[in-house]
Length: 395
Image (cartoon, rainbow, N blue to C red; front, side):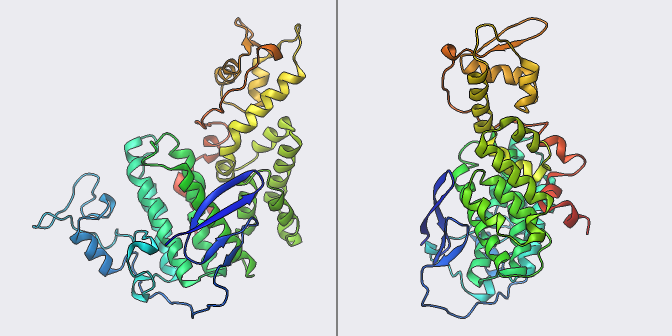
């Protein structure tokens, strides 16, 4: 049965569901609920992405995902004479199973060792997601739930086997690359295909397990990068900032950590001009980690400008506001102002009239497409390469 956990850190409070006997503390560390029980670690023996037993069972009961069927299921689907689809052994991936589902989760024959788990993550991102058309909602709706579920199963195998340190970190780093980029790509999918709450839960639990891997010591090539990603994802969390300042000098003074800390300080100081100037320096993956905070930051910035420039004779240039908010077009900045009751003049040069009397509170805008802050930074890389890391993809 899933264990209900509570995370309290910075501005976020969410109810999480993790694997048995683990809890996520507010400092992104894991602790066991059963401290007196320490059975020996299990060692996975399954060298395939999915055990033959599960593959046959799901094939027999018609539980294969279209991406696991033979003959490239997006165009053709293979079926046995009995009407059941045929599983492709090279494409079938172990699915996530809740501990209470009555399935055997701790059998070594069904557990994958670290090398197989890393191979599975690379397959899901570099092969499955590489084929996704991010402009096609049908393609996204097919691939996202599949990759999300199978990565959840990967983390489950890590937890059951207590894999950590240098063996677990690369697996979690690859998974987090997908989990951080996906919300930007699937933002328009309906709730039945994309649950923001469930996705956020998996991000937080994955970060908690990755931080535990780093705490074990060893050489981690991407530690500074992912500690910076955590700072950006959990913007304004004082505990996260404090832990970052306690890191070894070589990590704490890395460009990634310094930039992420500066963005956090700007957020806490409500220095929106500096914050958006620094956000422009983020690479694509880090911009995706920050992406969920954009509506709130822009809304607070507009309120600050309204208080600063509320005067009957003051007219604020819309083009300059567009730059300060780091939005892609004056039309978008104008729409944000009009929704809040502010007047935007028309003509050759447009101006915003920041009058307190006309200002009204509204719900935050839903995160939308960000060409300047996100997509332009991808350059010639595919989204799969952004998720896995350019250095990893070129090895």
